[in-house]
Length: 278
Image 1 (cartoon, rainbow, N blue to C red):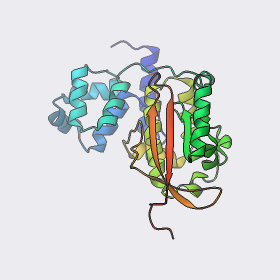
Image 2 (cartoon, rainbow, N blue to C red):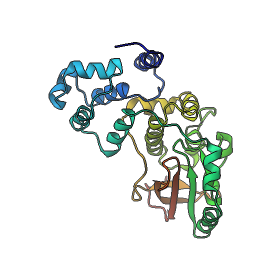
Image 3 (cartoon, rainbow, N blue to C red):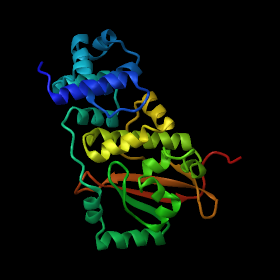
């Protein structure tokens, strides 16, 4: 197998991932090793479980081999990956996608009808924001900005606001009543975005900043959670920064039908239905 600059760079990244306690950009070999180890399989027991030989698994994990689609499906089924983990695995087996620059995406979604819709959502107490897949805010309504104070200090990126690597403590802890759970959910969606757009400058920059957060690194290393959205019945429990009153929100995250580079997040506020408050 020939050694190209890209393959050498991949090998170097993989070597760092095995020794570093910091998050590394996703690639298929590292991801499948992580899944196998999370399922507590040796390569031999993985062979029994998946029907893929241990030597082939080793080539995938250590040499950057991209398996045939049928083999990849065997691994997905054998490792019992859920729908989102399976999608993530298949995206890592494909070439990375270039992410459209933020300024262009912001112009694309800031149409008169969408801006009018954001004002309407304010009137009916619905939090609404458009982001790119790396959680850079494109445009949101007033309710959104009020719910995440000092977002501009995190360069208008929700992930950086939640983990806030440059601060002693994340401001999200003041307003998210189940911060640990929310951090895990956020990390799962960040992983999905980084996987698809892993070579984009925006992805490299975001991960470089997030990996200075001990809390982000811990979740990245400990789990194999992947998410591309959120179920509406998976409520988020928050404190209103203006009134200091608790509330619950049903959050829906979806891709715009005409582009995979934009997400719309809508949160419908409800009376508080979370754990007992102390």
